[in-house]
Length: 318
Image 1: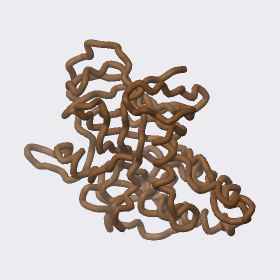
Image 2: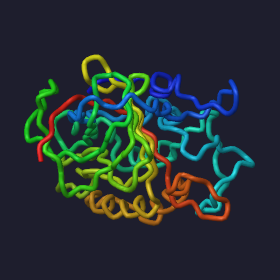
Image 3: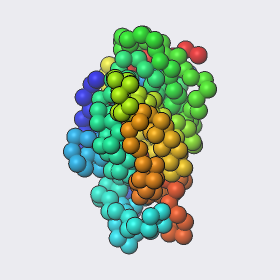
């Protein structure tokens, strides 16, 4: 697995938005569409995500992963949807990065279900398991171009150890919903997935262990596939054709997060799993509306998501 650097600092240092003449905003957004030049090729380029960064390098590592989704740095007095558990919304950093998943849900999985979840998930990608595939049409290396057609699809297990030299041919799961980014582009040597996608799924890897299955305890193995919507991608393109220090931002519908509780219960193999406690944690994590906005008259029905990632060039097959 390749190391992931600090995502917010490396990827988005020049991506801040502006409000009025020469007034920079610290809110972290994707770089803007350059509006051209148009692609000179219809060739397809594919990448397989080989590692995710869940922000575990420090207690607040999650706070640098993702993008500002709702257009504000949430603090006391800013507009906010009604929390499900009637708690007071937590404050965000000045960057406005929205990542309640990294703050609340991933630590819950690691602490109570699969302590080695991060390394297990990334090992499953690196050894040829089910992956997320970024498939782009119209790229010319790192050259600025707009528009680009981009989608995120699921790749079925490769069936062998990947060579990771650009020749691996990953079979696409035609039954899994794809995330579409209809007007993407390359700017500042980064592939940007825009506008925010509709609903789909994200593969987070195989977590848990199959060891000692007769012990009646433990967790897994479980292929963790989560429902997502409003996904955005910022993927810096490296000279060797890979993606380094990528950013994925999105929203997990609360209903989808709650549905995962059944999978967690089944995967515990006899260990204690409290569905009520899990529901409380999910409800407490809800921090946004699924359309990416805040509305004080509505109840929060989404959980913001931010991840770092790396990816390598591959080929795809039906």
